[in-house]
Amino acid sequence: MIRSPLPPQRPFDLELPGNPALPAIVVPPPAPEPQNASRDVSSDATSPVTAEPDEDEGPEWPQLTPGQKAGAEPGFDPNEKPDRPGISTDPGTSTACLPQRLKLILAKISDKYGAVKVTSTWRPPWRARRGSFHKRCEAMDFRVPGVRPRSVIEWVRALPEVGGHKVYWNGILHVDTGPRRPW
Image 1 (cartoon, rainbow, N blue to C red):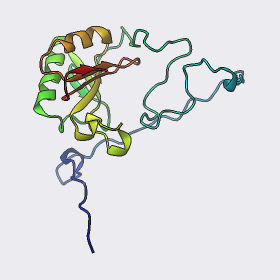
Image 2 (cartoon, rainbow, N blue to C red; image 1 turned 90 degrees about the vertical axis):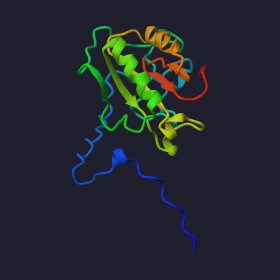
Image 3 (tube, rainbow, N blue to C red; image 1 turned 30 degrees about the vertical axis):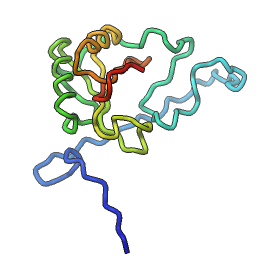
Image 4 (spheres, rainbow, N blue to C red; image 1 turned 180 degrees about the vertical axis):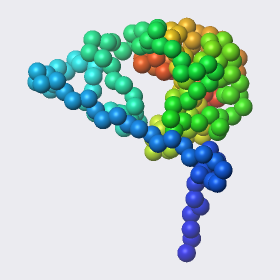
């Protein structure tokens, strides 16, 4: 009998004695539809809003709002205040697995803008796109509360140690350790 090896454990996910358990990930239930919103979605073929999320994007990825066009200025709240100064993470996200190169980039962004909220680092293979650097924890998605995403990505793009970079339409920024490229 041949046994296949188990995938390596991620040290920041282990619940060992002395290590605090990670907080539970809470996914809010979908908002109920208003009573008067009985329109025929099938006839609206030009709508950018999709009923089903892409298989690579889960419920945490917001969809385009009605009237918002792809390629438009990314969404952000100029009045958003950070939870705390420095680097913070969404529940269930850790920066412990990031390589030193990304940690230094993250520190530079935090020094420049005051606060950074990391939204995603490592993703399991079934949750990440093919070829994604998130599978190896060599990529991070983040946002800078209250700062225009395009100005942040322009500054990040100028850093020589940055590989891949992108700003998504919802204001989330992506940086990875791959070859230097936008996409």
